Length: 331
Ligand SMILES: Nc1nc2c(ncn2[C@@H]2O[C@H](COP(=O)(O)OP(=O)(O)OP(=O)(O)O)[C@@H](O)[C@H]2O)c(=O)[nH]1
Ligand SMILES: [Mg+2]
Picture (cartoon, rainbow, N blue to C red):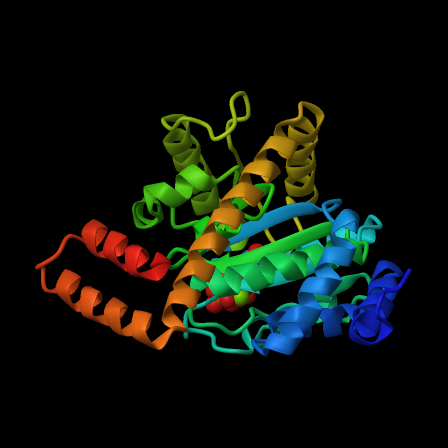
């Protein structure tokens, strides 16, 4: 073995620490993954490559819902339930918008106060970034690190605005849509595309004055989902009600998720889903790297800008412009 010790010494050491479940090593690794410095990116890549065989063992749950629907309160209650039954839980967020810049979930620590102090839980705010693709890559890689660190359940949260739901659904095993007890009116507000992503719909705040409305909302969602083709054959999305503040319905929500996951694992569909997600991730990286490579070359970047202007002005077809750009890239 003539492996140079100097360049890889730090990542390899941290790999062992991460595998042993060291939270500080995990946090350091995630910081590396989130960094935009080329040296850090190379170190992150080496580390992830070492750990790759030890990833993939967690249940990956995506959680989405409109602002104020009760995501943070649900994750607090659900996360505590999970650690209570012996699971280790990592929570990530995807929020490329400026709505909650930087701090995101950490700013929420009041709502996830108990979970954030739980030694079996790890909460990490959304990485900063301007493009959804960049934010999604860092979250995917952080998720892999958490799996290597032995977390059993990984939750990726996103707020129901923009394209982030698709990104989250594309990196998780099951996608949970939280809905408010607003019922029919609320239903109109949720884009059909997002409903189609849902494997489970959970109506929140089913308590006190809102309990009756939550019941009606659940029926509305049930009826609406019935008209859609289920994402997975034979697994139509269920609709459940919870009260995160009273802790009701939380265990049932977990049971539904575990059953769903168990079915997909048992019949091999989970492997197929993850393989498909990895393939899509690969092609999205190809596109990203191609664009970055083109833009890092001054002459090509100028050509790109000219073509972009012509496309915007309606003088050139986007397809023709893209083909011309790739031609000058290859020549
Ligand atoms: N009655 C009741 N109120 C709830 C429940 N869950 C959340 N809330 C309230 O709903 C409001 C929003 O809850 P959050 O958990 O912050 O919602 P969120 O979806 O994380 O909101 P954003 O992070 O802003 O998108 C807060 O005032 C909560 O106290 C619940 O189970 N019952
Ligand atoms: Mg929140």
